[in-house]
Length: 291
Image (cartoon, rainbow, N blue to C red; front, top):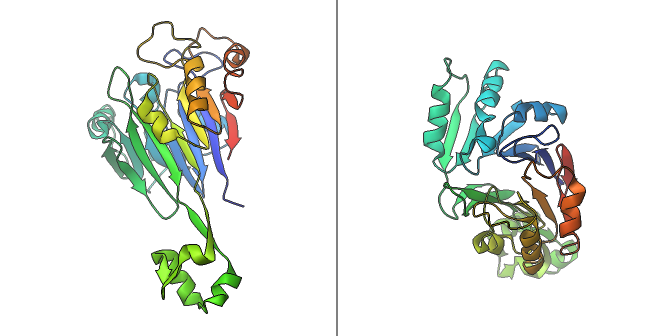
């Protein structure tokens, strides 16, 4: 069984929070890594309500610099400092260097751990290791904004019986996993590939083909659905159109979030989109999804 990927929706509201919906923030947990996407006001309290420690967060990806998506960042950093964090914290986003520097200058105090800040660039891989990579996708909003794609690396399960037919040693098996070939034997001759899982988060955006092309066949697409229908809005998405596109691009699971305060219940949103795309979840605060 693959390592589970856990998603915790810390905040599912939009620019004006409500009693039931906090500002946007989504926590992804994978192989002991805590990765935060957006950090609206009150995010650190939501993390505590979820029974987790903010000190475990390794990386933060900000989609854009509207207050509802970043206003929890400075108090979160100060809490980490007061709790004696020492390990570095990585922060990514459009113009991240400029905005993070400005935020830190708002505090009287320096912080006791390193910040590693990186600016987004169109469709650029921001982080990669042996397990996964995260890259950004430029989206359509009224300020510079990016969505993010978390892509687990493909992995190969070696069939030992097939490997023995080629007289491959343990050393050979290690080499073939790293290089894809050893002694003229190709990895695909002795192993079965399991494609890595893909999770895409839109942030705030008008529906855009660039994001959906990346999200094609995704295990999970988390998408801005500020409104149920279009209503002439140019800067955000509507749930009905997102559901139509999710069906077109063969998304496995669609999770809608970032809802206007005008919607009082999840049911009114679900009733509009479920007939279009059945495998849709209407997110609520502190909801957990395991992939």
